[in-house]
Image 1 (cartoon, rainbow, N blue to C red):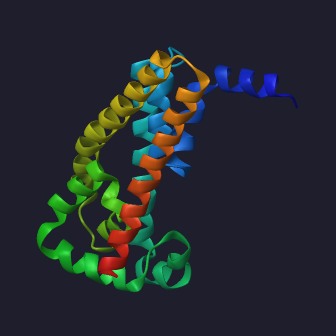
Image 2: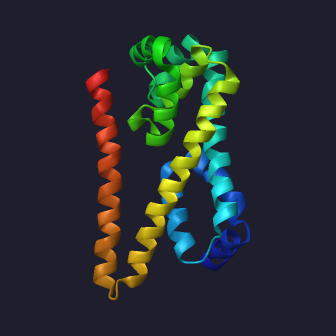
Length: 193
């Protein structure tokens, strides 16, 4: 299987690949999609819809796992996906008073490293599914638009940069920024747990 075949496969099924990729990988897929929008590889509406479908499907999965399996899932598999008993207990305590604000804010900030725990705890706390989805859809609109705009801007910079050294520096800067955001989220986790 050559690289040409892989590129042709990606170009043929580009929109069908977006939803599963964002379901598994998350926010970086949205940033890359923004760059591809700027490079005219993708179109805005189908890309936005597929990004939203993938992210919301992941949110529904975590909600369902929290509602269906709750504490037993946390004890058995939580350590593999960043969910601990302490983080769930802390989030449940906050959920009692502020679940609407927490869900919406978590959605538009990717949970600052707590997204999985918050969506899982929403199910565990029995937040009504309809309310949960309304808040997620509203936040998803802002989140997807923001990430696509950032990716589009990076794509625009990439096109404007003239030589290969500047392009490599730009890619390195983007990687450093993304790693910093992920690291900051992990740092916040250590503060609370």
